[in-house]
Amino acid sequence: MLHPQLPWFVAGPVMGLCVVAARALFNGRLGVTGGISEVVTKIADRSMSLDWRGFFVAGLLLGGAGFGLIAGGPDFHGYGWLTDTFSSGAVIGLILLASGVLIGYGAKTSGGCTSGNGLSGNSLLSPASFAATATFFATAIVVSFAIEALI
Amino acid sequence: MSTRERAAGLLIGVVFGLVLSGSGMTSPVVIRDGLLFHSGYLYGFFLSALATATAGQWLLRGRGARALLTGERIGWKQERPERRHLTGALLFGIGWGVADACPGPILTQIAQGIPYGLFTLTGVVGGVWLYHRGHRTAEDVEAQPAESRQVYAGS
Image (cartoon, rainbow over all chains, first blue to last red; front, side, top):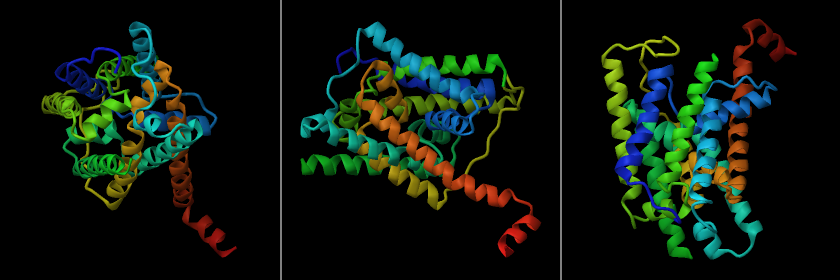
């Protein structure tokens, strides 16, 4: 990381307040995959009448771009273990593409990603979200240790 | 969907994107450090976000509040775990552990000008599209009136 990291006890609660804001304003369930899904299905239906979740995704992009502008550039160079291990950009691109398919299909199947199930679903004390969150955290931890052991 | 609702969605997104970037979650190295237990930041961040979201939403529901923009009474259904919650989360966890980015950070990577995120986002869009394609076909068959389904099945 190239920029000073916000303390977790500041960043975390603000993220939590975003979930509360969506509930207070729309009685909605905040989730990034839900927003991406809204954009994908509307485009597939040749409609551009996006609801608040589609605009949430647009805002997320604006926020990320705003951070880049304020900080004077992206937060990191290279791409973690992938650029440390592989020199071919095509290989890295393919690995990221395949990971993306698993992320998108998996999040839709399980009802949400780290935000939709991890934050929103768990905060509603939904047993399905507990099961999904425990599964994806455990899987990602095992995968990370497996990569560490192999490379 | 009113302009006010869209503007509110946009604003929540801006705050979410700024703080997600400021927390370092955009960086695959920070995520990986968390998943390998080299740093407790990811867990402090996640659990404090979860505690805030839980307290705030249950407080709203307890007060019988109505949503400010839609007028809906605040409430929700709790879902029972099904097989799909485990299988989907397993696939998601593999992707997250390899790419060290989930959907929010993938978007903020692209917004910050990190081109690698474009590969991951293309995959996510493809995965979401595949899911919808599969489920839309099933829903369309369900949505057909019983008579026409019989005719179709018989033909």
